[in-house]
Image 1: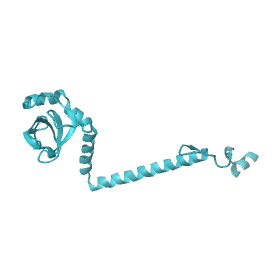
Image 2: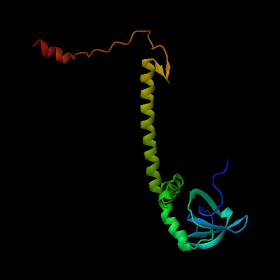
Image 3: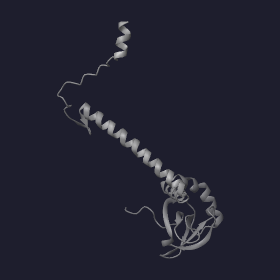
Length: 171
């Protein structure tokens, strides 16, 4: 079945246009092919008709009979914990992030750009170090390759003594 979100009684939707843009409503009844009766008692949206092209259907649905009163819709809304489920959804988190980005000042955007630049430099440096280490060990991108220099592992370098230390040992 290709469609999972149907226009039906109890379907929760987001208003995409008009004075209540961005608010959640529940479909109470279907008027005709293009219009529905909606109610948003907890989001301060009065019972009214809206065109379907003004709504974005969510996957949330609450149970109540069609043409139910606002009191019944409010009770079903609270029992279904619609607001909590909506706030946990990825869609709501994206909307909140978009609003937060819109509130940034020029200086905030500058600081964000600098922080991203620093993060990317650190990420690139650590990636290059890991790639270099895996290349030396003979494993690059998960493919086993012959280590440089044949089968023999490279000997560890010995620490050289400083000339000042040699003079101190002789005395």
